[in-house]
Amino acid sequence: MRLTLLLLLLFLCSTTIAQVDTPNDETSADTRFISDDLFIYMHAGPGRDFRLLGSIEAGTEIKLVQVDQVKGFAEIVDPRERRGWVESKFVSRKPSIRQQMSNLQSLLDDKQKELEQKQKELSAIKKNLAQSSRQKAKLNRQITQHLEELSSLKQQIQKQERQSNMQWFTRGTVLALISVVVGYLMGMYGRRKNKSEFIS
Image (cartoon, rainbow, N blue to C red; front, side):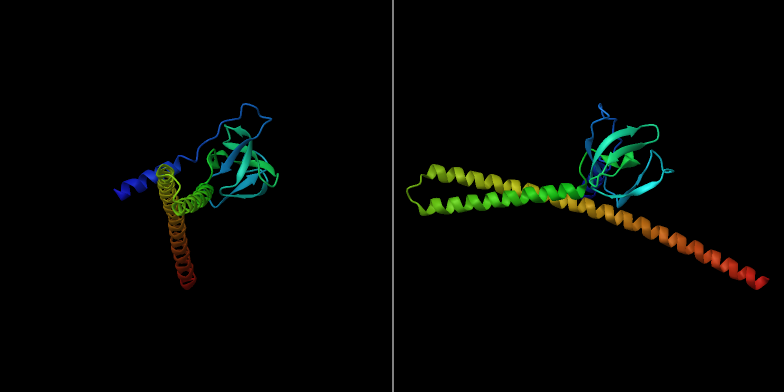
């Protein structure tokens, strides 16, 4: 069951990285986000052969100017007002996982403050015997609702954290495999070189 849920989460995550459409008005810039990756490079034109202007970190909020569907590059403006081109597959309509987690955490904090306020109100009502039981019941229902919302938000954060950890684990595994292959090839090359020098 857990494996099924994990695979479903990975599938949902992969669908957030999608090709973007050209805006209806090319003079207006739509808000987009750099998808979850370590960083990507910004070029001076729609292609990897153009001059590099710098890099953009994952999760950065950008403005989409236009998209070259043929070359697969999108013209963007980053928060530093740099204008350049990046591969459109790394431009997403949805915020990154880190941004979503930050938003969920902020919402969780707000709900926590609301809960504390409701608890204070309930405490004041309990001290005042003149308050009606009807109002107490209403506040109890509100607190129960906030507790349910808090529980739901915590579950969402935990899911996002598991998804983020899985992505980092996958990247680390790929890098480790690449390092092993490169080390093996370099060792083979070194042994062949020593063998050829010994023969000569």
